[in-house]
Amino acid sequence: MGTQQRNYRYVGPAELTALVRPGGGGRTICSPADFAEWVAARTPDELAEPFTFVVDAAGVLRLAPRRSEHVVCADGGAVLSAGELSFHEEAGHWTVDEVSNQSTGYCPDISSWPAVAAALDRIGIARPSGFTQELVFRRCRSCRELAIVREQDFVCLFCSADLPLEWNVA
Image (cartoon, rainbow, N blue to C red; front, side, top):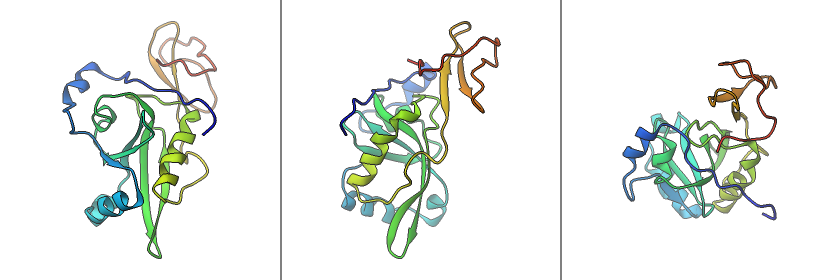
């Protein structure tokens, strides 16, 4: 990868960490064969919805049903990225349709994309060139609330203070 990847620790509600069970996290997908086995076990209804994903600290993609908590998918550990993604099959090949960094548990920066790209490339899944939906997370320095920046407006919705331009959620 060349560039240093940031490890994101869980910053969401503490009570959700109680849902983490050893070995109960998302399905690890390390190879094309792992993905083929995983996707073959999904129903058409499941495949019609996005999935929760994390790229764990080792760079491995983990997948779970959409309504799963990211911290559970990650077995409570730090991640290189997290969000939601959806797949579709075309002519016998799987591709990623949509992929976001939407995880209010880890709040990964959009700069986490290379970890996602590398994990998808490793398992042979075609993908877009970046997140198809990018969320910009910031922590307000004044009121400490977590904010999602919309339309490049770096102002806290809770207290109207300026939000930092650089990622600062940790």
